[in-house]
Image (cartoon, rainbow, N blue to C red; front, side):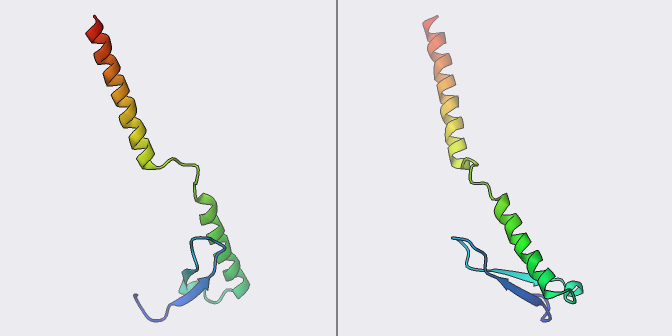
Length: 84
């Protein structure tokens, strides 16, 4: 870690995956009220949580679907040309 005078804030998010988050406070913001700093940390974690996309398909499934579609199209063309 760079420097030894870092102000550290440990936040315990409500998450099934994470036990805690460690945030490093900017030195110029250390004189702000603790309530504002805590609210900002909570908002940051909530923003991260709302940006998580669980409905996005996995890249493996997209790769599998692409390979399958390509194979079906290729074999269809070979089959149609073979009939002519």
